[in-house]
Length: 536
Image (tube, rainbow, N blue to C red; front, side, top):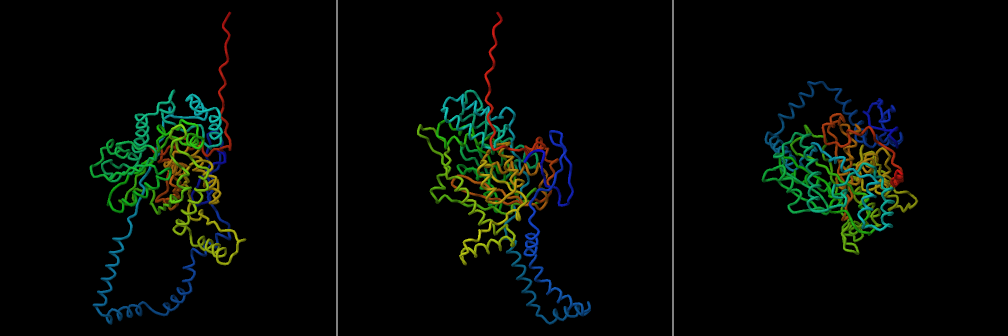
């Protein structure tokens, strides 16, 4: 997948649009979305419209019978019914209908809408290339030569590009991680994203009634949510929450919490901020399972504004949130674990069981989500496969993996690393086009933890792929071990040109993407400057 073969999602028509790449090459943007085979498409249409197909004969018979009556005959029949029926019975039926309608309207969940979101883009002074990473690691003087080589090997195969970001405290020589620098990083990320989303939506800070912040590893006192309340002078009755230690899936936990709160707090806005802090969580030891996070995690964050006020100005409607937790299993519980190494240095250890645990958590999550989103045609095929294997003992029958491309147009998969994305691409049988937002986010921004899902959705918007009615599936994994999902439906077509006002970090450079990401990208070792002989 290269820049010369860039693909975007045009309207449903067969039209194509020429565009010019950064290299001056003219390409044609064609629809690369999922198209099932003709046989499967016919089956899907037949099952999806089975109710109409079954009712068609009855409708034909009814139409034939009615064709023998005139309008005066129908009016006479209606008049006869109203005169012969008891008035008290009619009143009772109307009263019952009114009560049932009132109960339904009072008990149904309030719709939750996403007004807009913004992703933080650090300045050029925060850029870290692979060469800068290795140079800073070597200058630190704490890593052995073997572990420097190990980090270089991981970095070269990570799928990260040359434009990711680190906080100043890690880039300084020597590095100076401290509470003040960690607060400065948190303020820059949070306030930078919040400022942009408030400008994009036009919402005033005093109108925000709910604040939910998630940051797994940095939880100061006062909390990060208190920092936001203080900085923006939010009102005294704001409901603020600070989620810590919940890993990379905490962003969707925050969305789910905000959704639940919006069922209780009427006519208000909920601000959700997702980030991770690098400054105090850089690992300065030689435990290889803890060095992995150094190579993958980068600086970033996102702010999301939700509301229950109505859909008029909203981009998306939140359709479903599904949370699954495997913390009862010891292996899953310890596969991402913060602890001290043998020398007393604190780091986050990633277990070799991580990918297997993530696969099990994903299967549990989609088992719950599937019946909510999959078309009936896919559910029937899955049930037939299950019955054949479990009831009739047909072990040779391969388990049917539901085609989630029939349920969603866009996939935002947590950019935790190349191995994570490869595993999900294989398990869900996704195409490179569907994986593109996640892979490009990993390449451009690195693993920004819980906020990576929003960089991916921003990429999809910047490419002009989001159309009204499209559905997007966000999937995230986190320590504990958790797998969480959120399903959004686009309420309008997103115009990339209007995203240039701020908040979308891709718009100024989207013409360069997608790019081809090699399996291995070597670190270029700087050669020493040549010695010059003094003039004799």
